[in-house]
Length: 221
Image 1 (spheres, rainbow, N blue to C red):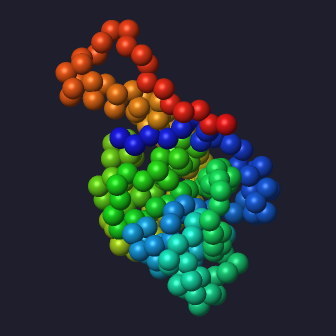
Image 2 (spheres, rainbow, N blue to C red):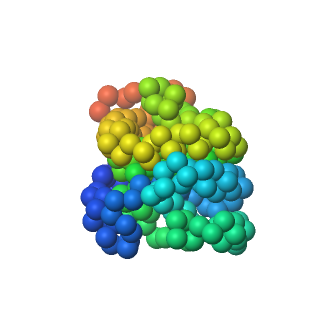
């Protein structure tokens, strides 16, 4: 599987992140981190949003990232009279403050190849809502798949799951803690590098080689 630096993407204080970003402290917040393009399905998310807000009136949404669909998505937000409820953040150098601020991280992709965004969210201790496509469902533990995946392009299912999650911040917190444990156990980039190293050694006939040099992961500065 893909891996992320679980030390870099560690849980952070939600309140402090919201203060730093100028967000309301108590409003339920869904965040989507990803390139604004058809693959990532932000248009489906915006189609679902009015009904989500009808069910959870205090809810807010942030789209973090830039891309070819940015102007069209911005027009959709304006036409829906939702500028105060939906924030198009644009590209950011570091998504961690937005992950820390979120109650739920949503990635409504039409297709994927195990994106890093949901892995980073899970490492940050945040629950995720993904579409049931290869590369997305595999990053979740089996116990989460019933409540954390929806069919791609299914607006009604997305509304239901988002509203359920944003209505229950305590359960969001519990799910986030479980997913952090899963990310640390299965998707830590250090263990992933070692698995890849072992696989290549096996394929090349080198074997496990007791005492072999440990694979190294570049450290962040």
